Image 1 (cartoon, rainbow, N blue to C red):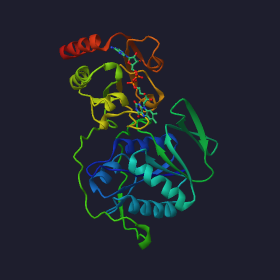
Image 2: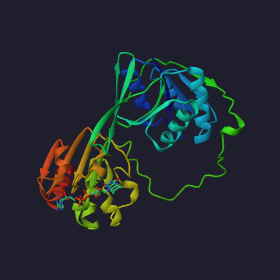
Image 3: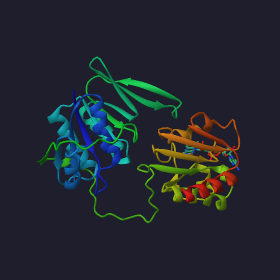
Image 4: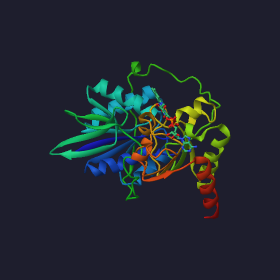
Length: 309
Ligand code: FAD
């Protein structure tokens, strides 16, 4: 079985979610080849993880990357094409599938082999069920961040630089300028610790406790939608269906009920601590550690204890 992996970079390094694709391919015993574009240092790093890399120098925008990947799929003829579940890769994946007439599965959290077929598992209906999907022929698949472990270093598998001729009509949009939007940038997707606050925090003033605990733990602040609508924190921090999909090692949910629109974005966390005054709150159904109590009493105690640690 052959897998082609698209490794996305942030301009400096390969994204963690993309590197997990190497472990995903290994879990299937697939012979993997990675495609890295526009960042030679990232290509070298990926090769050091034991996977051969095809390096394309100039492609960075969605149209060019789609064309480059489509051509590589034609040449390599893989059984599956793996991409991370980022905004850019989710844009590219269906385009390749449509151009090459392939199946497409998004937001996959697990893969297994049955005979010679791959079964793709993904959450549906806001994470209330997991569905298994089989694809006839080659599949283009986006994989949810945190579903597979980060790969270990291995012997360098080498980088091959390639030039791919892109048909003139393939690139319909041209980037003429890049304007950096002045918004807060929050790296929730790559965070190992997230402390999230919900409506139960009660006020912007109390929400500061969430920020303080996150800071003491060296983590990142997350939020449900209500605190954002109430202006306690910016939209960049939203976790969930219409926010970010996260998978940290530790997720602390403070005053959060556990609505499906929120939990669908954080249920991949390795360890979930939930603090809620209602012992029947749905968040406790997915929590590893449930604390029944008032956030305004419990958070100051946690902050105090963590400062001592
Ligand atoms: P609530 O559901 O109101 O829960 C507050 C909780 O705090 C309660 O369980 C309560 O017992 C507890 N509490 C209250 N006071 C205290 C206290 N002093 N101490 C301890 N506990 C206390 N939401 C998201 O989060 N992310 C999304 O991406 C998202 N996308 C959406 C998309 C759509 C199309 C729609 C319709 C909704 C979306 N929502 C999203 C909103 C979602 O449906 C819920 O309304 C939201 O997640 C609830 O947030 P919450 O848990 O903070 O608030």
